[in-house]
Image 1: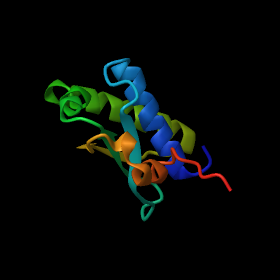
Image 2: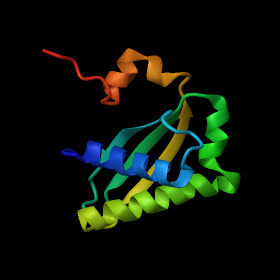
Image 3: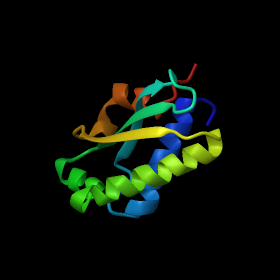
Length: 116
């Protein structure tokens, strides 16, 4: 990853896969919503995890939010290690029906590479 956006989305997505294993295989996407550096000692990162079906949201959140907390904690620790500073990481889960069939959204998420 080259940019902060790519780094954040890659790390959060990686943790989703590690923790969820094969429960929601490839229907997860991560989109960084905001990166606030107004406090250099504690950058604030807001990211959204997209799932393709309503039934996947409770799996990703888990009982008493245990799964999403675990994903967030591991991703935050990984980011802090790479950045060498504490970070605030906020994750939100959103359902976007069949997001992987939406060409514009796929492009926004970095999945579609247009040929020149």
